[in-house]
Image (cartoon, rainbow, N blue to C red):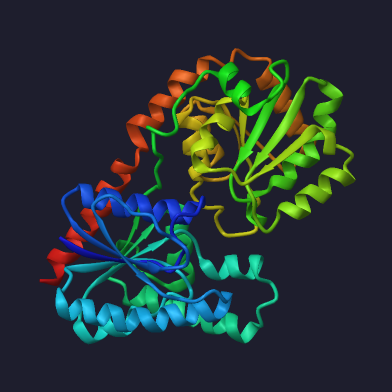
Length: 388
């Protein structure tokens, strides 16, 4: 298939969205497709094996760049369609990603929309200063795009249920396909050696969160549990690896709780270093705050698994139930600080080596990016065949 892949995010970032786009594009190409990726230029100078990347100028101003990109995307996409008509478009959903809509209407090309979450919910949480008329406009656009898409690919059945109920969509139009993990990059490494590389104290127990710090990730729950864990033991530290709009609030909370000395806020690190932080840990943490209809599909969980680490997960759908079902660790109510601290203490007392082989096996057998993208490829092929 000749696939045009449209996204409005910056490539090359150490973020779930950027990673997902790169893995989709690379694996679709490896499956024998002709893949052209349209993306904002920004400062990205990298390549993706087997993928033709069209980097569209967009400027540097936050809002002006988004508008400019969408305008130029519309013209560039129309030109490319005339030059070499694609079989279909795969579109990474964004509330501002509308530059593709006019060309596909004119040239009657089917498109598949990849959706991680109801973005209106995220905007309301992450950009609270946006006036309500703009939110109404975004919501109408999102409803329009959902209706126009040949298929929607979402990351979890719960996201599918939410979209069906809220936007009155046909359930048969939506496919739930989990995200994946790079099992070559994320793999078990020697814990002692990892700690040596990162200059961590070999005598301590480390509990680690890896990921973008966003309002719905619930990292504050971890901080609130530390005073209670301190009452149970004194040989531990919590590590937070990642940046994000909620990081400053979480750091302030650590000071208010008097546990600043027990938390290392590492910030964002190069992706190649993330496996060392996971492997240096004793336990990996997977909180979630139910401020959205569904917390999403956490790539961090799959990375923890691929490194063979035990997980303490929030007892919400797609997190705790998945961990319990696959015996990856334990599920707990993160909103109960004492219960969370007790769970941390109890798991640290276990023989954690028993999780290593099992967690790795589940990731390799079920969650490699190739497995995910093969399913995506099947959806695209179905749409192309139906459009002929």
